[in-house]
Length: 61
Ligand SMILES: [Zn+2]
Image (cartoon, rainbow, N blue to C red; front, top):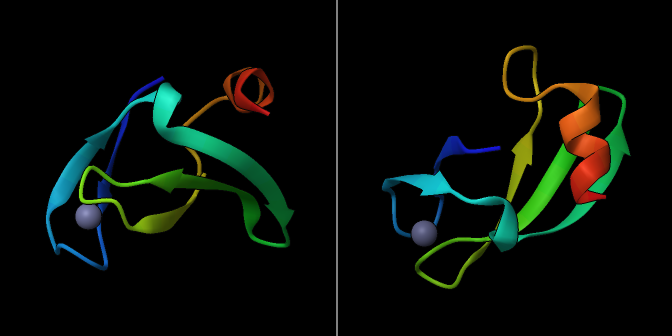
């Protein structure tokens, strides 16, 4: 599962790989993925419709 994320630290739209993800947290808005950006900053990405299927999220968690 790949997705793009606009980093709040380096302000670049980065392509994020599953290997960068280290946590998935359930939030009222949906599953939130925590990962480390290429720049080294910890980022959070909300999994909205189309970002990932439930199965893909569980694969990471
Ligand atoms: Zn970054």
